[in-house]
Image 1 (spheres, rainbow, N blue to C red):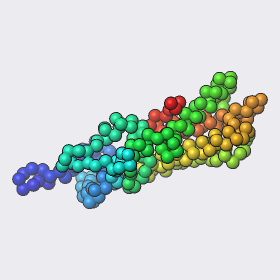
Image 2 (cartoon, rainbow, N blue to C red):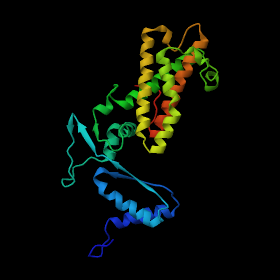
Image 3 (cartoon, rainbow, N blue to C red):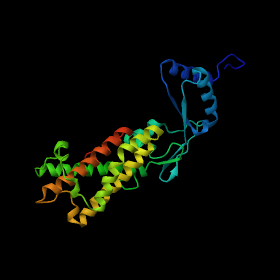
Image 4 (cartoon, helix red, strand yellow):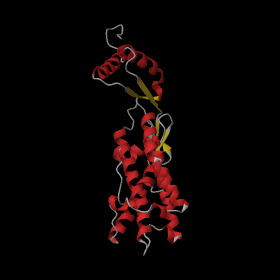
Length: 261
Protein backbone atom coordinates (compact mmCIF):
# COMPACT_ATOMS: atom_id res chain seq x y z
CA UNK A 1 0.00 0.00 0.00
CA UNK A 2 3.04 2.25 0.35
CA UNK A 3 5.64 3.29 -2.16
CA UNK A 4 9.33 3.03 -1.46
CA UNK A 5 9.42 6.72 -0.54
CA UNK A 6 6.75 6.19 2.13
CA UNK A 7 3.85 7.80 0.24
CA UNK A 8 0.60 5.93 -0.24
CA UNK A 9 -0.40 4.35 -3.54
CA UNK A 10 -3.75 5.52 -4.93
CA UNK A 11 -5.13 2.06 -4.12
CA UNK A 12 -4.88 2.81 -0.38
CA UNK A 13 -7.61 5.49 -0.24
CA UNK A 14 -9.78 3.23 -2.42
CA UNK A 15 -9.54 0.55 0.22
CA UNK A 16 -10.37 3.06 2.96
CA UNK A 17 -13.35 4.32 0.98
CA UNK A 18 -14.86 0.85 0.57
CA UNK A 19 -14.11 -0.03 4.18
CA UNK A 20 -15.96 3.10 5.32
CA UNK A 21 -18.98 2.11 3.21
CA UNK A 22 -19.18 -1.36 4.70
CA UNK A 23 -18.67 -0.05 8.23
CA UNK A 24 -21.64 2.28 7.74
CA UNK A 25 -23.90 -0.68 7.10
CA UNK A 26 -24.20 -0.85 3.32
CA UNK A 27 -24.97 -4.38 2.16
CA UNK A 28 -24.27 -3.83 -1.54
CA UNK A 29 -21.61 -1.69 -3.17
CA UNK A 30 -21.82 -0.48 -6.77
CA UNK A 31 -18.78 1.10 -8.39
CA UNK A 32 -18.81 2.90 -11.73
CA UNK A 33 -15.50 2.73 -13.59
CA UNK A 34 -14.35 3.95 -16.94
CA UNK A 35 -13.56 1.25 -19.48
CA UNK A 36 -9.85 2.04 -19.10
CA UNK A 37 -10.02 0.78 -15.49
CA UNK A 38 -11.08 -2.76 -16.40
CA UNK A 39 -7.91 -4.16 -14.86
CA UNK A 40 -8.90 -2.65 -11.53
CA UNK A 41 -12.01 -4.77 -11.10
CA UNK A 42 -10.52 -7.92 -9.59
CA UNK A 43 -8.44 -6.12 -6.99
CA UNK A 44 -11.43 -4.07 -5.78
CA UNK A 45 -13.60 -7.18 -5.52
CA UNK A 46 -10.82 -9.01 -3.70
CA UNK A 47 -10.28 -6.24 -1.18
CA UNK A 48 -14.01 -5.87 -0.41
CA UNK A 49 -14.28 -9.64 0.03
CA UNK A 50 -11.35 -9.54 2.46
CA UNK A 51 -12.70 -6.55 4.38
CA UNK A 52 -16.16 -8.07 4.84
CA UNK A 53 -15.33 -11.76 4.94
CA UNK A 54 -17.37 -12.16 1.71
CA UNK A 55 -20.40 -10.62 3.45
CA UNK A 56 -20.86 -7.58 1.19
CA UNK A 57 -20.95 -8.03 -2.59
CA UNK A 58 -19.58 -5.36 -4.90
CA UNK A 59 -20.77 -4.84 -8.45
CA UNK A 60 -18.64 -2.87 -10.87
CA UNK A 61 -20.11 -1.19 -13.94
CA UNK A 62 -17.63 -0.42 -16.68
CA UNK A 63 -18.60 2.62 -18.69
CA UNK A 64 -17.37 3.17 -22.20
CA UNK A 65 -15.86 6.54 -22.92
CA UNK A 66 -17.96 9.35 -24.38
CA UNK A 67 -16.86 11.01 -27.61
CA UNK A 68 -17.96 14.62 -27.92
CA UNK A 69 -18.82 15.95 -31.38
CA UNK A 70 -19.38 19.48 -32.63
CA UNK A 71 -20.33 20.31 -36.20
CA UNK A 72 -19.80 16.65 -37.00
CA UNK A 73 -16.18 16.75 -35.83
CA UNK A 74 -14.68 15.23 -32.64
CA UNK A 75 -13.86 17.72 -29.89
CA UNK A 76 -10.14 17.29 -29.34
CA UNK A 77 -9.05 17.12 -25.72
CA UNK A 78 -5.66 16.79 -24.11
CA UNK A 79 -4.76 16.55 -20.43
CA UNK A 80 -1.21 17.57 -21.18
CA UNK A 81 -2.31 20.69 -23.05
CA UNK A 82 -5.03 21.41 -20.50
CA UNK A 83 -7.74 21.42 -23.16
CA UNK A 84 -10.67 19.33 -22.05
CA UNK A 85 -14.42 19.54 -21.68
CA UNK A 86 -15.91 18.84 -18.26
CA UNK A 87 -19.35 17.46 -17.56
CA UNK A 88 -20.25 20.89 -16.17
CA UNK A 89 -19.38 22.40 -19.56
CA UNK A 90 -21.71 19.93 -21.29
CA UNK A 91 -24.57 20.61 -18.87
CA UNK A 92 -24.18 24.36 -19.22
CA UNK A 93 -24.37 24.10 -23.00
CA UNK A 94 -27.28 21.67 -23.49
CA UNK A 95 -28.95 21.51 -20.06
CA UNK A 96 -29.18 18.75 -17.43
CA UNK A 97 -32.24 17.03 -18.90
CA UNK A 98 -30.69 16.53 -22.32
CA UNK A 99 -27.39 15.42 -20.79
CA UNK A 100 -28.98 12.86 -18.49
CA UNK A 101 -31.26 11.33 -21.10
CA UNK A 102 -28.56 11.19 -23.78
CA UNK A 103 -26.12 9.52 -21.39
CA UNK A 104 -28.72 6.98 -20.29
CA UNK A 105 -29.94 6.23 -23.81
CA UNK A 106 -27.12 3.70 -24.12
CA UNK A 107 -26.17 0.59 -22.22
CA UNK A 108 -23.25 1.38 -19.93
CA UNK A 109 -20.82 -0.80 -21.90
CA UNK A 110 -21.76 0.74 -25.26
CA UNK A 111 -19.76 3.68 -26.65
CA UNK A 112 -21.54 7.01 -26.93
CA UNK A 113 -21.08 9.74 -29.51
CA UNK A 114 -22.48 12.88 -27.84
CA UNK A 115 -23.22 15.26 -30.69
CA UNK A 116 -23.99 18.75 -29.38
CA UNK A 117 -26.01 19.56 -32.51
CA UNK A 118 -28.05 16.34 -32.55
CA UNK A 119 -29.07 16.45 -28.88
CA UNK A 120 -30.67 19.86 -29.41
CA UNK A 121 -32.56 18.95 -32.58
CA UNK A 122 -36.33 18.92 -32.47
CA UNK A 123 -36.77 15.67 -34.34
CA UNK A 124 -37.37 11.95 -33.88
CA UNK A 125 -33.59 11.49 -34.01
CA UNK A 126 -33.31 13.32 -30.69
CA UNK A 127 -34.70 10.87 -28.09
CA UNK A 128 -35.17 13.33 -25.23
CA UNK A 129 -37.10 15.77 -27.45
CA UNK A 130 -39.20 12.93 -28.87
CA UNK A 131 -40.19 11.66 -25.42
CA UNK A 132 -40.83 15.10 -23.94
CA UNK A 133 -42.88 16.02 -27.02
CA UNK A 134 -45.10 12.97 -26.42
CA UNK A 135 -45.71 14.11 -22.85
CA UNK A 136 -46.46 17.66 -24.01
CA UNK A 137 -48.91 16.34 -26.62
CA UNK A 138 -50.71 14.24 -24.03
CA UNK A 139 -51.00 17.23 -21.72
CA UNK A 140 -52.30 19.32 -24.62
CA UNK A 141 -55.09 16.80 -25.23
CA UNK A 142 -56.04 16.81 -21.56
CA UNK A 143 -56.11 20.62 -21.49
CA UNK A 144 -58.44 20.71 -24.50
CA UNK A 145 -60.67 18.15 -22.83
CA UNK A 146 -60.92 20.31 -19.70
CA UNK A 147 -61.72 23.34 -21.83
CA UNK A 148 -64.52 21.28 -23.39
CA UNK A 149 -65.91 20.62 -19.91
CA UNK A 150 -64.76 16.99 -19.64
CA UNK A 151 -63.58 15.79 -16.23
CA UNK A 152 -60.12 14.28 -16.80
CA UNK A 153 -59.18 13.74 -13.18
CA UNK A 154 -57.83 10.27 -12.43
CA UNK A 155 -60.93 9.32 -10.47
CA UNK A 156 -63.28 10.26 -13.28
CA UNK A 157 -61.32 8.46 -16.00
CA UNK A 158 -60.78 5.32 -13.91
CA UNK A 159 -64.36 4.35 -14.69
CA UNK A 160 -63.91 4.74 -18.46
CA UNK A 161 -65.06 1.84 -20.63
CA UNK A 162 -61.72 0.78 -22.11
CA UNK A 163 -63.48 -1.83 -24.25
CA UNK A 164 -64.29 1.07 -26.57
CA UNK A 165 -60.62 1.10 -27.58
CA UNK A 166 -60.34 -1.34 -30.44
CA UNK A 167 -58.04 0.02 -33.12
CA UNK A 168 -54.64 -1.65 -33.44
CA UNK A 169 -52.84 1.65 -32.77
CA UNK A 170 -54.77 2.17 -29.55
CA UNK A 171 -54.17 -1.40 -28.44
CA UNK A 172 -50.46 -1.08 -29.18
CA UNK A 173 -50.23 1.90 -26.83
CA UNK A 174 -52.25 0.02 -24.20
CA UNK A 175 -49.96 -3.02 -24.47
CA UNK A 176 -46.89 -0.80 -24.09
CA UNK A 177 -48.37 0.77 -20.97
CA UNK A 178 -49.09 -2.65 -19.49
CA UNK A 179 -45.39 -3.53 -19.75
CA UNK A 180 -44.32 -0.60 -17.59
CA UNK A 181 -44.40 -2.15 -14.07
CA UNK A 182 -42.47 -5.22 -15.17
CA UNK A 183 -40.00 -3.11 -17.13
CA UNK A 184 -39.19 -1.01 -14.05
CA UNK A 185 -38.64 -4.17 -12.03
CA UNK A 186 -36.28 -5.63 -14.63
CA UNK A 187 -34.34 -2.38 -14.95
CA UNK A 188 -33.96 -2.11 -11.17
CA UNK A 189 -32.85 -5.70 -10.66
CA UNK A 190 -30.36 -5.52 -13.50
CA UNK A 191 -29.19 -1.99 -12.62
CA UNK A 192 -29.87 -1.03 -16.22
CA UNK A 193 -31.44 2.44 -16.38
CA UNK A 194 -31.05 2.47 -20.16
CA UNK A 195 -34.05 0.12 -20.30
CA UNK A 196 -36.23 2.95 -18.96
CA UNK A 197 -34.96 5.35 -21.63
CA UNK A 198 -35.48 2.79 -24.41
CA UNK A 199 -39.00 2.02 -23.18
CA UNK A 200 -39.98 5.70 -23.02
CA UNK A 201 -38.78 6.24 -26.56
CA UNK A 202 -40.80 3.27 -27.83
CA UNK A 203 -43.91 4.38 -25.92
CA UNK A 204 -43.53 7.89 -27.31
CA UNK A 205 -43.22 6.44 -30.81
CA UNK A 206 -46.45 4.45 -30.37
CA UNK A 207 -48.27 7.51 -29.04
CA UNK A 208 -47.04 9.79 -31.83
CA UNK A 209 -48.13 7.17 -34.35
CA UNK A 210 -51.63 7.07 -32.84
CA UNK A 211 -51.76 10.88 -32.88
CA UNK A 212 -50.76 11.02 -36.54
CA UNK A 213 -53.33 8.38 -37.52
CA UNK A 214 -55.98 10.56 -35.90
CA UNK A 215 -55.16 13.30 -38.40
CA UNK A 216 -56.41 11.04 -41.20
CA UNK A 217 -59.01 8.96 -39.36
CA UNK A 218 -61.50 11.02 -37.28
CA UNK A 219 -62.52 7.91 -35.32
CA UNK A 220 -59.05 7.83 -33.76
CA UNK A 221 -59.18 11.37 -32.45
CA UNK A 222 -59.15 11.62 -28.69
CA UNK A 223 -62.22 13.81 -28.41
CA UNK A 224 -65.30 12.29 -30.04
CA UNK A 225 -68.04 14.88 -30.32
CA UNK A 226 -71.40 13.53 -29.13
CA UNK A 227 -69.83 10.36 -27.68
CA UNK A 228 -68.62 11.08 -24.12
CA UNK A 229 -68.11 7.40 -23.26
CA UNK A 230 -65.66 6.85 -26.13
CA UNK A 231 -63.96 10.17 -25.42
CA UNK A 232 -63.43 9.12 -21.79
CA UNK A 233 -61.87 5.83 -22.86
CA UNK A 234 -59.47 7.57 -25.24
CA UNK A 235 -58.63 10.23 -22.67
CA UNK A 236 -57.90 7.54 -20.08
CA UNK A 237 -55.33 6.15 -22.51
CA UNK A 238 -53.82 9.60 -23.02
CA UNK A 239 -53.67 10.25 -19.31
CA UNK A 240 -51.94 6.92 -18.73
CA UNK A 241 -49.32 7.83 -21.34
CA UNK A 242 -48.67 11.15 -19.59
CA UNK A 243 -48.40 9.49 -16.17
CA UNK A 244 -46.00 6.78 -17.32
CA UNK A 245 -43.76 9.14 -19.28
CA UNK A 246 -43.61 11.55 -16.34
CA UNK A 247 -42.79 8.67 -13.97
CA UNK A 248 -40.11 7.28 -16.28
CA UNK A 249 -38.48 10.65 -16.80
CA UNK A 250 -38.59 11.17 -13.04
CA UNK A 251 -36.63 7.95 -12.52
CA UNK A 252 -33.99 9.22 -14.95
CA UNK A 253 -33.90 12.64 -13.30
CA UNK A 254 -35.34 14.37 -16.35
CA UNK A 255 -38.10 16.98 -16.07
CA UNK A 256 -41.25 16.26 -18.13
CA UNK A 257 -42.48 19.29 -20.05
CA UNK A 258 -46.13 20.23 -20.47
CA UNK A 259 -45.67 22.49 -23.48
CA UNK A 260 -43.10 22.58 -26.27
CA UNK A 261 -41.87 26.01 -27.31
